[in-house]
Image 1 (cartoon, helix red, strand yellow):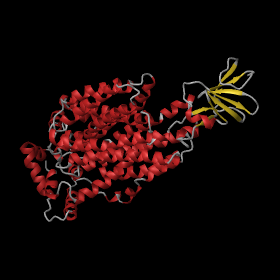
Image 2: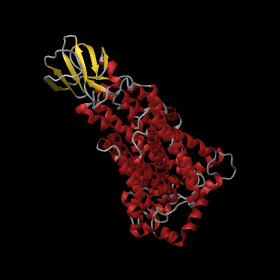
Image 3: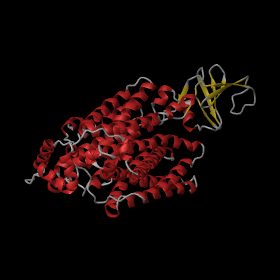
Image 4: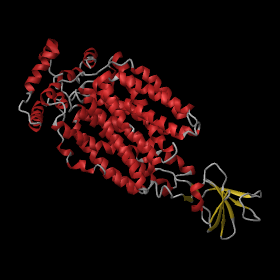
Length: 562
């Protein structure tokens, strides 16, 4: 297409694009940070009901001590109670959400067959601070009848991500990519720090909801931004490795969570990790695709001159030449229509219905949305569930992030050799197989369970990573951000469902893997029905944007050109 010629003459990934790319991707680390930060923000340590009076003796089966803190690290929920005796001589049996006062005990022993007065906890709890010194759970006692509030933190965050993906994706098509990148990155820093100073649970959830919206907005738009600033020879690698920055964010969360066990300090450190980006994001230029789509030809020429100068090139393409080539490529019909009718304004109102302008486009959109959904569902089930695999939870989360790096390298290699479709479908099928193998592996073989979980995360990361680029290539410029934004919206539906899916392990330990495995296998088969886009240039031009405003038959012709 016409704009792709800019990269043929100015370079597909030279100095100018490289500087923009690494700067924009650097801020994407913060998205990975905020998305997974709740793993340790809402970390629930071992806990028991507290009792009135000073505790002098503690029994737990054959273990004895003089304080609950001595025994609490080895206490296991679902087993027998922890028995304590106070200085007044009262004996209590402590569990997580209730305690029982022994009536007229004869001696201090673990077993007791007499009468007891059982009461629910009165809001006072004793927490094990061996692993978690302070989290929102310990600060606001989000346990027992308030446990659902802690479990609601991640779904409400992902609800904000869903809304942000749709809102900012649509706005970016109207006002430009750069303005959204600047606004969302500034809000990420401000809201991230504000979360650390939230005085109660409801302020915490509200600020995190807004933080989710701007984080999602940045992530959606940055994919389109780097895609529209790099040529098709390197577009696979540049788009996929935005996900690598997200994975680095996950590893930063694991490392920071290991080093800092106080939640508000942990939140501040995570929020300022990418703050240097604010110093130079205001210098970002708008993409040539967007400028051409909006008929801003003078700005396009200025951008091309700047790219040529920065890349040390003497040859500089002219906008007039690009427009002449566009006329030749689009043929006499489009030229006659331009002369007979007043061109429509490029800011013509678009909607999500433009993704369903024909049966073919509707089927394509539904399949793409399904990939977004299972990619997100599987991604977060594997990520959030990694801290419950056994062993060191910080190491498990770090590995869940680290395994994504080779997945994107292998995914890029496969996408450029066998195509997007033929990489995505096998990846989903492999993720489904890994889930089924986890079900049949004996639960006591912990290392093998962790290994299979990482294989599943590896496979789902490939599909989840390439769908961004695949979506960009399947839709033309004028609705590209809307397509990515709406797809990301479906992806966030999956991420909202994911925490609840993880909690289904309380019903049956392998139910999350069963759900993800079946869906991944079915959607993997449906993926084979999508068209291949390997090596094809992005669809663009002012004529395509104008075609969206005409009657549906013409709209169909324009959209299906992609």
